[in-house]
Image 1 (cartoon, helix red, strand yellow):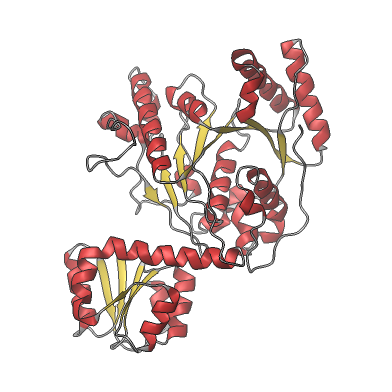
Image 2 (cartoon, helix red, strand yellow):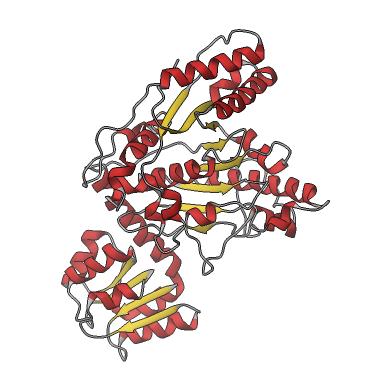
Length: 449
């Protein structure tokens, strides 16, 4: 962890930095009154303010926090202005006498406490009041009958939007016919430790669940990466990758490997639910892979992502007809159809054409309407923007309007339509409004019942 300590090198700050460095952390003590650009340039994950030693002003530190999203721990005594500030902001406060020892022994706990308070303030601002989003854990899958429809893009954008609106999110990449791209969507570079269900499967089977209430024990390895939040957003977002190396899906041993990876996937989803996370699955479209098939089967809600042209309609109709034959109309309770990249087609026309194709394949009338959503084609080349790894996750389209990013106007309709799509399962987010300008207009199509 990269820690910047504001205080004297020969004082409490130096002691803190030395203790943390001995534990393997990158700890940097900074004396005096530093320009904020210096602190921002360090990209700290934790900022420790030693009140009796620092020459920094509170407003300067607040600017650094806004630009870096760092957690804060204050070392201060009662009556000090820094103590009052940290208390009001709900940052952890340590006494100067034991600060070095407590940081060394409780660092992870203190950082999580600081981040929890930061998220609470962020949500209060986002919802314009003391509203905390409460959601039951659920598993949401994104799949479809063909590649290139935007399944992974929608899964990433849905995860980012929900996380930015206060829902704890755990993303699992279950693509199994190519290298998964969730790692790339969320900008987890070479400096990040990325865990993969396929790598875990290569090492052995998942631990057995204990009887009754699932209780992960000390033997359960870490198998997720915390995704850093972009500027202006505070979230709790985890990611577990799928296929990271294409060689993993080749050869005669790939079948057993993917079967074991599917077991790890189910183990991970169960673990996520036990910790209160909503799971987003990039399920892919390979029904011959145990990994993708398990992801499709364990989803509580499955978004089938289609393109509006004829090949997309026919492929989607074949899938829906196959589901109907295997599971009957009750299966449609957990299926939602999403037409992605829509230019000018009427939503009513797309639904009608899809229904006609399904009924033609089945040679019978469907007893109920198809639940369909429409997402507009983005006016900006988001794929090109995301190819530049220096841009960061704030260039996910769903976050543009929320953070007033460079492409906020071009992505407003898409972001609003995505929010409307998810609001069926998360009603509170429909009312969420940030202190920034709320996007207006956009494409809104009702569910077809």
